[in-house]
Length: 140
Image (cartoon, rainbow, N blue to C red):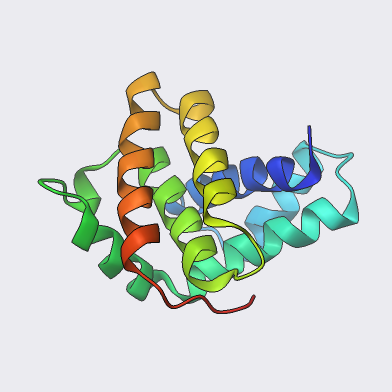
């Protein structure tokens, strides 16, 4: 598995853990890396960028996602799906070095792996709308 794919899978698990408990983010990171040792520093660094960037821009990201999720409110979505949309939207809006197709494909695969099969279609539809409508790309 490629390092960035691994990092995205780590990021979704860390974002999930963060949302499910009130632990400080440093503690969540430390616990995760202790539980899942063996990742390269490059993977850990990209994971950290995704998680911190998503959290830093969470208000804007949630507003963007809400605009493109017809008949769905963020709080009603499955926690996994909501956080996949969040970190992938972060990539689409702020990671100018990552092609949108790569971001969307990775997010869909993660949704299929960590959520339900139908989640992949949902994630694909929302992210496709965002990628075609939100033009402002900013570097990480």
